[in-house]
Length: 130
Image (cartoon, rainbow, N blue to C red):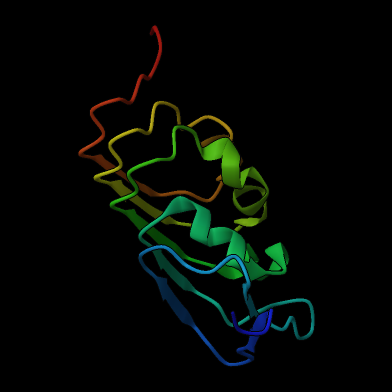
């Protein structure tokens, strides 16, 4: 059995992050905030929970687009509600092929700058009564 290391990766100039598959709980991607803003603009994840590996959540405030694909276990965006609260500049959100996603509440209501929303391949999604 190996040592119990935590992995912190600091990415001061990163503009795009793509995280797919299952990641180690010991991984942290640190996005420095300079002059109140991060350089992060584009986030793509293959598992909604992977959003929690990017810290601080304030790093999401300048993200313009986010893509969430092929999550097979998450039922609600409330799992990452704090991330969506920070997405003040998010203009494009694509969520696709998330078989168990039943609700997008706990996320979409915070996206006041959103211009484009794409929801595809979400067989369990319930949008409630009109």
